Image 1 (cartoon, rainbow, N blue to C red):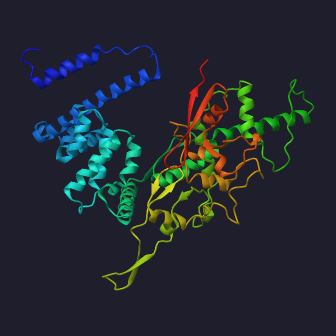
Image 2 (cartoon, helix red, strand yellow; image 1 turned 60 degrees about the vertical axis):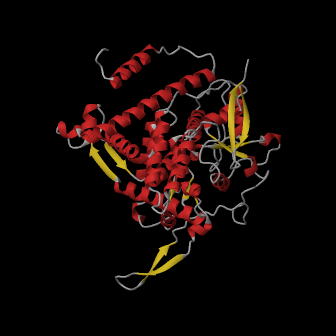
Image 3 (cartoon, rainbow, N blue to C red; image 1 turned 180 degrees about the horizontal axis):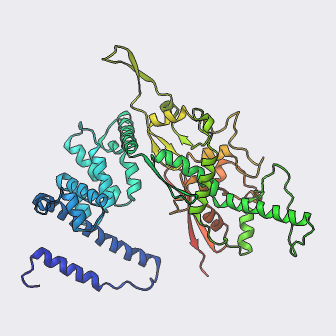
Length: 483
């Protein structure tokens, strides 16, 4: 490599060194595998940092003009065989780091954060109020960098919305900034909304839609409820029972040992004891049936939704609901009267100190968007103990009620198992103390678990521990039982 510039020399050396790495066929322990992946992640982040520095240098050098390209983005897309969207993101990040995010750039160079974290930090720093002093801006960036070292980009994005707390801002100022950030995101998202369709002329139609996250999660929540494993299992059970009853009625022989369940009209085929049913499944060694085509299941559910839309009542209330939790004072926030300079009349302006609301899926919407949705949907107050909808019903019933699910959704937005991100709308409510052993059917004894983790918590091959989080919720950590 004689005559090769120093920078290219070290790139070549690094490339050769990476090429010499041999990934083991298997690891001796989980800790060993975790360290190995962490080392590779650090190297990948360091390379990404160098690459963004090179992109910034290319922009300063005017290389795009030399090749007749329309800007650095177009040049980078061609030079690195990237899509235009990825190239635009990289140019934006490179510019942000080059214009002044010293702590973020240093952390990326050291491999402590990823480009995903950098994107979140850059966006959050751009949204900061101009009234902050340089010292406060520096404190905010350093805080975000430290958090980026221990949380994923999605969590960092949520925390960054209230980052003004690090600048000693008042609660009202933090709430106002939080809501403004969410409102700006909603406005930008609304500009991207579109729908295209194509008739395949074979009895099918392709529909591609880009909608706001809130609208999409209303739909996804509905489809998940229609296609959740337990719902589909119940449907299969009902179909199987109907077939067996029909066979008996026609005089057909039912297989040896088979039983025909009698389900009275209006009665659910849901097992009377979901936890005990799971235990019996595990004891019997029952495994899930052949994998379902979930994309097709969702497609069938979506087809049913479209076929049953109330087209004659489009101006009425929305039939599908998504639980949204917000403080009462934010929903009924006082309106400030201001004078419109054009017409001289008083206008009502929502209180800007309102805190954003949180959907049961964990997605945040601005207080204003929640108020708008409240105009088109029935509101069910989340009350711990009320005359109309009692939430803690003790031992009166075996299964948890829908009001209890709504109450628990204010504390959890996903399955409570560690590392599981299946949404709350897919979860089953598990009795911490089994009902058969005297455990009550109330919120203090309820925990949301997805179908797979609900089976796992009853599987004798696993032991689990309960971890109390700072916010009071529980996390279940599973361990495979040692032989």
